Image (cartoon, rainbow, N blue to C red; front, side, top):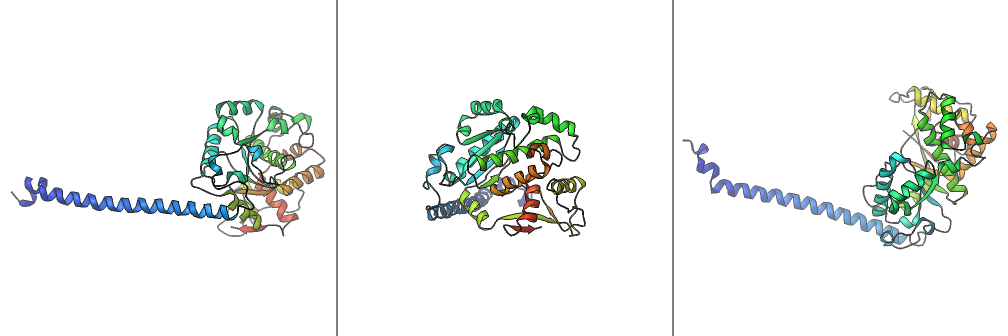
Length: 332
């Protein structure tokens, strides 16, 4: 029998010594990479903590405040300026709870901001509190139904989500799913209320499905935005850019809603994208909504249904045409 095929050679001591040495090498490599990963996270956390401590004059609370979180009414600086808005509805309760849980766990300066959620009605509001009381404690919850009762924002024909849904169906909006029209109105009315009632000046709008993955600083995000406000724009003159008909219609809806003469086509230069990073000046959002109601001589929601489009599409076009020097336009 060939030595290479002998039982002793295959199962014998030399084979096991070789296997053990190989396992030790792999174990050393795994330990090294694990240690490097841990040190990277520790270093990252220390850097973020140092950043927050160095900003302590502008950020209330201390570095350990995330372990003893105050309720939302106490979580404001003098201006109450930095706010987060998360639109949600009943099927999204679990992911909203996950977002709040992860945010509380990973934000190094939660005391610097206020967390808002906008739900459909008072029934959803009470149900969310019952099902997720810990997450609800961190939130200021707005009810879409109640916001529709504001005569400046919606007429009496639209003073509830049910009436709004029926009105959208009657309007026969073909370019956008009716559900998306409602979602956009939720964001607009929520942002306006956060500014007018709660004193928020800047807002970051997050989808309820958003999930923070590592430690982060809200102050770092908001300070960066305030020092360099920017809006993402698509460059449609680039041959690689192709706009589908639905997207072009949404852009044109915003232009028509603002009564601007431009029209977006594939030959146009710029088109404001619907992206998943929405930071906004709430003073300008509120001004835009007032302007929109005035030029249409209707409450905002009533006029919006005729020309629906997403918040970033309206906001981008408004800033580009009326306040181009207040923000940078990052062209893709």
